[in-house]
Image (cartoon, rainbow, N blue to C red; front, top):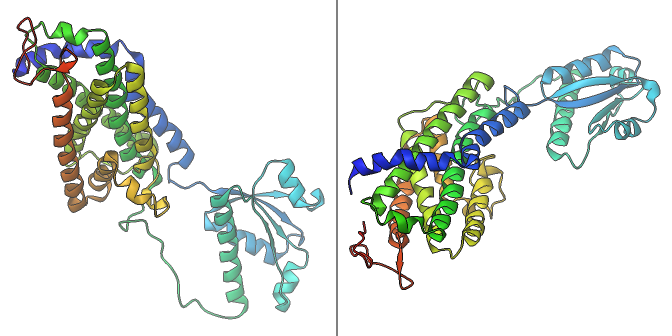
Length: 384
């Protein structure tokens, strides 16, 4: 193998990929669209206040105003008010497609002053489980605080809520490494599966076998291209995450091995699938079967801690999990031990899959059987 030939072929390979707009879209534009969408959804601070419609039937008593002030200061809900004469709040919520509501009953202030039990009414939508939990928790927390003050008690046990790593991480912080892993997966897999199978069908590899370029040199040129795309995509995502949404992530020296080995890993898988498949259509189906579970089960869009317990071992069997976990370890937590473990797993996978892919990848077949690595097909064409 001569690196000069790989570098000489690199521009031709890049031009061929650039002629396919879908490849560039999936590699660079689609991850940017995703980070803009998710960043807007989760907002700058990573939490969205739940809208809560309030109907105050206690004539805006001081006690009811105190209760609502406590809710408003919690930061978990955003209050909007309706007049008492709108009637049943449940019907109002249904008509206006609102999911959460609170009714402060008449006599709320008097009951509080006389220490007579009084209940506020909370409406939630069972279909919005997370929002319902936030609303119910916020209302219950304010109610507990008022009960404590009315009873003349003092706070003994309190809680301090911190994010993992004792740092106020935002949702966008976790999303940036996940989307970098997503771009590392999608571009090489979709592109290489299609390219290797289509070029085999169209005899383009057979034509390349008549040139001085070897299979290894062709593969090195392809790897350079996808590593370059990964570096550009990571830079774009980090820049947008930091400048637009205030993400606290950085590309460190520990990030670079994942940006290099990740494309190598998925180029190898794509080449392996495209080489063994009988037709491009079959290769595409196999590639999708491999790719789509990794997209959603590797911690790309949400942490695997949210998964059911039986699904966590499945996620840890997926190659992309170790890339995303390693990127989190180095870009967010600065956890060197976790990063090195993930890197070791990725390196082992890369070695095994590169060997498997190069074993089955051939310029041409001879009587339906790949020729040996050191041999050449009829006509004197060279192998690797």
